[in-house]
Amino acid sequence: MSLADLLKKGSLRELASATSATFATRDPFSGSAIATVATVAIAIAPDTTVIDPDRWCWPHSSAMNGAEIDTFMLREAGFKAKGVADAEALADTLVIRDRELDDRWF
Image: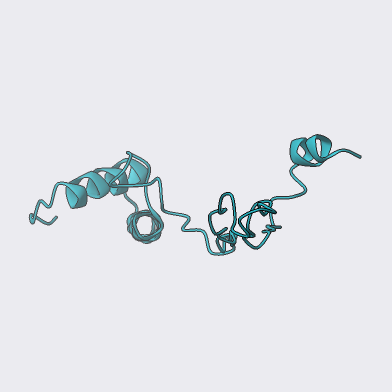
C-alpha cells in the first residue's frame, strides 16, 4: 500500500513522524557544509476526545443548548402537570424570553 493510499484512507491521522535536521552534503575541499536544513517540529495530534456538545448552539445559532433544553423540559412538565393546554409553546416562549434577558416573569 502506498503512502498516498494511506493518506486517502486517513489512517495516518494519529501518527506524526519527523526526521532530525542534518547538514547537507559536505564539500570535500572546504570541509564545511554547503547548506543547513531547518529543524523539524514534531506534530502532536490534539486531544479530540472531549467535544463540547453545545459548540454550535445558542448564542452561535438558534438551536437550544443543553441548559436551555433541561430548563425547557422542566417547564413543559410543570405546565402539563398544572393542566396548561399548550405547555410546549409556553415553555418555548420562555426560552426566547430568557435569551432576550427579559426579566418579566409569569
